[in-house]
Amino acid sequence: CHSAYAPQGVNAIRYAARLINHLDRLGVRLARQQDSRFSPPFSTLQVGTIQGGAALNIVPQSCRFDFEIRYLPGMRPEAVT
Image 1 (cartoon, helix red, strand yellow):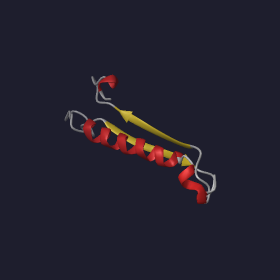
Image 2 (spheres, helix red, strand yellow; image 1 turned 45 degrees about the vertical axis):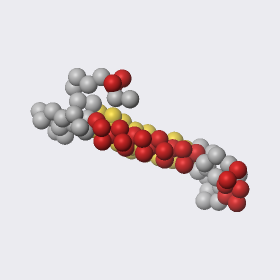
Image 3 (cartoon, one colour; image 1 turned 60 degrees about the vertical axis):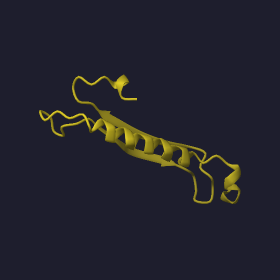
Image 4 (cartoon, helix red, strand yellow; image 1 turned 180 degrees about the horizontal axis):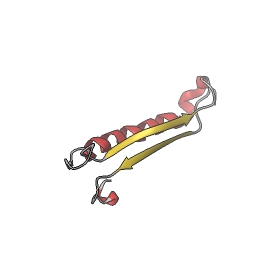
């Protein structure tokens, strides 16, 4: 929908931003567990790409982002939710 009607639309980028903020907080938690045998000495999480929206004056209907997590050896991915 046109940006003049933004309150009536669902902004996919806004929802993606919320998810990315959650991932950032998760990355901080991951960094708490450290192992000095590795560089960096902690698991990492980063958002590497994001795409969304068609034009400045249109509420974005879609948004896509990619992220990666690199765990320290021995970490169980299911324990990091």
